[in-house]
Image (cartoon, rainbow, N blue to C red; front, side, top):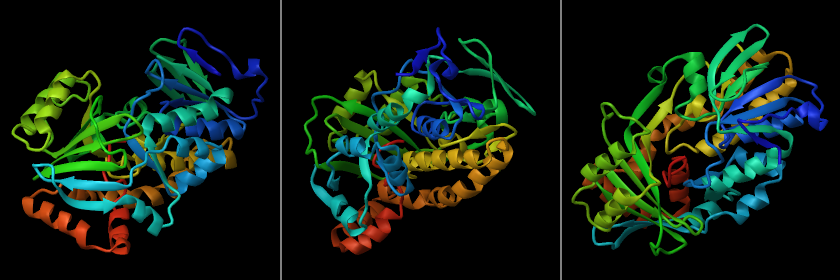
Length: 407
């Protein structure tokens, strides 16, 4: 394993790796970062990945690897591992307040109708597979983060919160919706992050018996609760429409629990039980459903990737787009190993073609997962019962990630 913590360091030169091109720093060891590092190392670059957490997250909501990301995973040799970790979901069932099924989408039939090679698996398993594929040839620094960036015409001087300062030829921010690299190089988050009128929370559920093949979803106007069997560890998700909360802090778990208790008070089905679990859990993810919009994804020798550049929200295939974008960026850099700005421009021009349609589809996806009215819920449920598979496939697959869980 080629991974270090912030107290130590190790140079690729010391391991006999050829240093044909420049050293590149990547912030973020989630999905985009390890994928980019893998392809950069194979292009002769010397990538370093810095991650503020002490280790990779082992938890995470189910995500899809689909479209161009399937080819990326196959070329990396990780697709067999992804399929082994895949969930066994076949259906998505909509429930009434009494727990009766009011609608159903046959996900397995949709995949067959579309001849899809996609796989759904927990986000933590996807991240672990990508890390495993890249770690032997990449320097990973866990438990540290970037403090300052000082770019010039020849590179970027970087200071860290714990490690000694270093210089890189380029810096890539693959550090998510709340990207520190974007803030340091482009400006305040508020200038680029747009609240989409929804919030999402997820938490694991222990001792919560469910059908391993069926995702359950309960709706009231503007609110949804889903229970996903995942791969042996059941996950609950709360998705609700709400104006931007004044003073919202994505790190304030106590605030999140209060908001969930208020929004979902009086709900039917198993809402009271799930709210009790929210109050007791120590593993709650909560954030705004947001989009990131920038006129350009690079500035000098600093560029953005994945959600940091173009978060497409809960409904937009974020993991798949992150993998595809990482491969595109690595390919552009390999084509122009010394011309960073030209490479960044080529990457952006190619990848925006995939991103922009997904960003435009958020309203349609929200209408399926979180209908705003009782009439909208009834129409959605009726449609899922009456439509033939081919028509349902055309509609549902156009919605992106279908909101099964947060990315």
